[in-house]
Length: 146
Length: 285
Length: 137
Image (cartoon, rainbow over all chains, first blue to last red; front, side):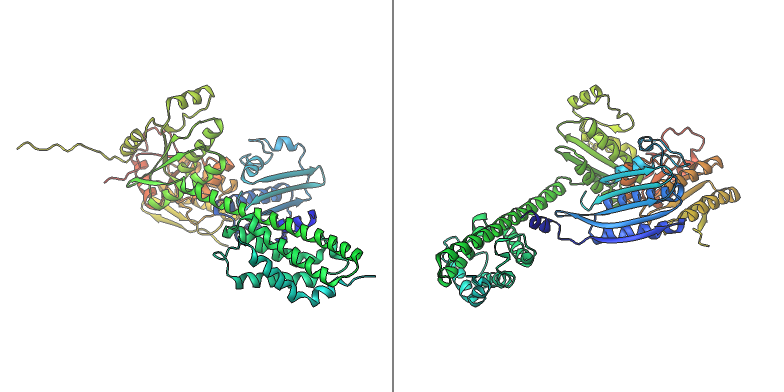
């Protein structure tokens, strides 16, 4: 019974897409790809802009600190709401103190130091995992009507 | 002795449909105003065809079986569309319940052994009950969608942006200001600023019951966004008790222009735009 | 290589950003603008971002840099035409866009620049907005 109900609530097929990002020039095409997906699930303009900006911040971090990496773009659904999930994986040096990195005003690089916490405010879900010497993985999710 | 239930239903498909239609039409609560008999028959036939096609001896008591995906899809579609059209739960339930009756009637005619009959009837009962539950689940979901849509409409209605003067717009906020609402307020305010090329926006909060630190934060965000666009945002309608709360909570609103009434905000806006309102002095002849 | 064109209009430099900037392009624009200010002795820079759909912290920093650098060369910077969605996102992100003035459109931006140059010696307390923005009836 439960299985059937789940089938009803999650009828929209998941759409997946991998994108490697190695250079500065890859940032704009990646943002455009995100926009394409967001338009497809009819995300509102403000939410689209927030998602794209968050994606832009994270992809820059990945290039600056992680030496590039790969991004997984997914369309997900929960009940009647659709959303976009982005997974940024790099094989860089990793972040030593995540709690510190998530504080407003902290930055190791020459940025404004609002990267991670600011980005978190722009999306509905934010998750970061990092292992020193192995790399960092950031997952964000934005609902179309979130 | 095994009974080939699939065969029986295949053979009797037309009869099932007829009986089902009869059951449905016999009900006094039939909504002929919402759906014609022809449409009802077409809907019923579609469902029966799908059901008979996917039904076999093995899955008879197992509604979780993937074989019924198509049936459930049709059923959910019918149920959701009925919820939107304004059918009552009873009327929607009757649709699937009367099918159960028709199926059991047919089985009664076809199976002779009482033991087999009871067994098949029980299984059928369970299967159709599962379908009924799904019908209700989706019916409620359909209703929830209607409610959600209305909620959206209400939040749009409740944020009217008014062009007070050439270059001045006002937005009276009525009700609680949560983060979802702030987003709508910000969006309509900023869009209107662009469209009307206004330099001053007045946000009137006379209708906001309480201002806590979260609401204040939302107000500050709106003001900052307005300034980024190149316009000024004035908060008006600060009641004395709200002023007290703001100070007691230690909220800093010193960075923004606040006025007690919409009138004084408008006056400030006029000054900003270097407009003068004068009382006409009639010449005494 | 692509470059964002800079137009000179009297005392002012006019830049319209029509494409989404990748980093190199933005850094080049920063350098080009500062060089142009120094070369032409321009008194004001007007950056039209009405066609820009995204301003992230990098772009925000470039814009801020342009503002501060040109101020050192005695020129004011006005950013005009920011999209509502971009403004909302910047506020949420926590990016204040310091060092530049903002205006609704090119016309109002020009008026603001002219005004700034007249009062250039006067002390300005609020750099984000100047409500003497001129709309005379």
